[in-house]
Image (cartoon, rainbow, N blue to C red; front, side):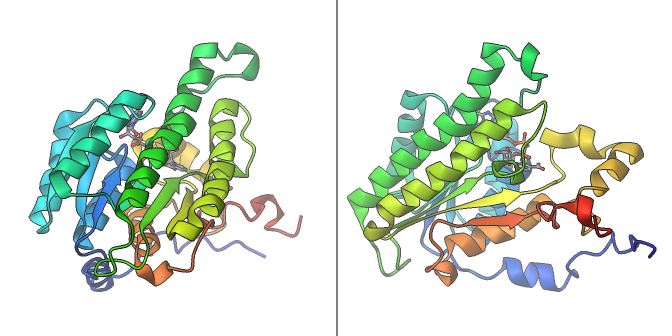
Length: 288
Ligand code: NAD
């Protein structure tokens, strides 16, 4: 049977998208998003702002881009603060949370999104490449989540804004479950993140802290430009995506709003995979 691939242009229609974005689900709450000056983090920060949250826009080097994200959030009527911090650095993470609490009184939502790739064939991978990816992707997630949990426990539930004391969303990857040759450090960091998420979710659920992950598949951002910018690369990528289109960062932003809101209050310790079917063993599309 001939494969259909002529729906790749289809997106949510324009009248629907703004309507979804104006659902004010997070009013009165403060979100901290790491790595929010570009890509998925940027889209999540903007979406949380549109949903009524004040947003701390963390960045590591691009101050101008982070300020632009903060301005966009202010433009949608919320408060925003751009804060520079390397998520792998304990003192900088603690200073960032202190700045957030000083500015907004508390933090209700952490989206731990900052992540990097430093790819190499395994026998050529340097210790520096291994350490940096693990330090940003996994140690960074630990350090930020620890500060968030400390703040949630200090403050407790504020029923007027949410029935949970706090929400943590880790931005993982389909590579928390799909092995990835040539990217062993990255896959190890995301696999580690999966059990960080589940173990933490189990530990703090009784304190009404909800911990979950979003695992994106192929999303059009600066991290993976090489995978989609030429027609050949795009065609190769589509072999891995049953839904036959690349994902957009805004689609992850909308999911983060939903997962941070009380709509999902009974969702605890789950990975929400958003991948156009990439984890469905696409090699078996034609029956194997
Ligand atoms: P991106 O490169 O645009 O975003 C990564 C962000 O993290 C950048 O803003 C970068 O400045 C920031 N960052 C890097 N090191 C940091 C540090 N030490 N401290 C603070 N911030 C730091 O790429 P993206 O695709 O938006 O990636 C965001 C997250 O999504 C990553 O965790 C990535 O692993 C994950 N992800 C992306 C895809 C995809 O297809 N784009 C798929 C699966 C998972």
